[in-house]
Image (cartoon, rainbow, N blue to C red):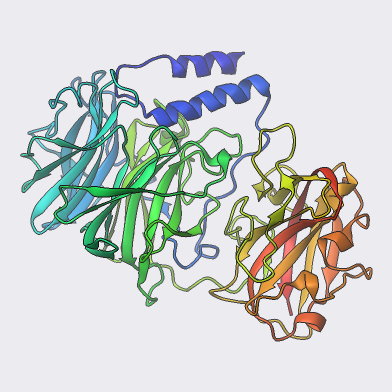
Length: 561
């Protein structure tokens, strides 16, 4: 009950504009979790240089001197005395130029600060430079400034709040040539927020080739179906049209989340190629799996088909860990509006606990991702490239038939993603679950690892091994790892067998695994697949006529010669 009272205090209505509705929704989820019992898991470790896919930016290290600390905090007794957060930052004219959100107990407004080293910022005497004065849109304050510069003009996009509307947000746009004097903001998108214009690493909007011709591109929105998420297009960075919906393909338990930043034509590896696709930073509960936190992760969109998602991190690149991220107005919260590349490193300025501003940096990584070999799902190990995603990629990818979500939890479909609940070694493992309907064909093949960019070699001596812990029901034993190859074939159909002579096919494992304990499965797959090129590693459930729920864990996977 102490937790319940604490949550209720945090949910108590604040002054307008003080907290993101998405984060309020997440706090309500925490309230629900407190009523039904403890969370089942915490999040895994943030990424390291050894397990990020080539397209993702990072890993990030918190910066400040002499130890990690905020770079900007509340000050004085006036308009920024209680909270400063969620800045937009560009590097121009030899200095870091920051617009930041702040409040002193009233509606949020926007201030300006500068720095020559990126760590120590000086506030502008003219602050606040963007005020809440365009009515009725800004009657509840202006928040979370995105900041860009193009041909000498600065563009700021803010979320304005009018609490007489539902949803209350409007995306407002204003321009300036000196970052102090701004034009009167105008509404560009009603009943939505979280705009992210596609830029290069220098915060310069990129003119992209689209189906409408050369256009600047803006993604916006969040998980709330009442608002949705869209791509919009512009020829002049001011008028935005052709608003097109798109799907983030996130599992339901990632909700809530918000779009933060989008970047194209960028590098992640020193001396590596330029990626002309789009990396999108998102913030939310994401991979929390029932544990309350608001962290930052990344997804990748095609640079030629702007609504097509082609990559997704399944753990956070930055999650709350320092005291100033854990304690504050909204505990355990990181939210970012801005990332820039300068002096050989990426700098992410972010709001911490909705109270102060932090900085995390990421130099270019020294090398690309290594071919898949082993993982125990621990810190620095390879993480899955998908979460709860059915493999419908063609060939013998497997797909899904007559399998639904594990009963009793409101799940829409089968699961396959990391947890910290039951592990063979360390603290993390891959959890799988689903429910078969008793049909003649019951199967679900879930994507785990994308090996297409750096495929491991398969020769006559290559062995696949893993530990599996099927829970409670014999149906949970009808599970096996699978490998999809570049020629469209799949390991499950090649006749490979495990150390006990059982087919390395989900149906071939049925009844041969002991329940509620760890089982080692090992198979010399090179005898069936030598010379083939693995493009994906999947986890399959497959049992004709199978009926009922299945659930378990997989850990310590190895694919080595």
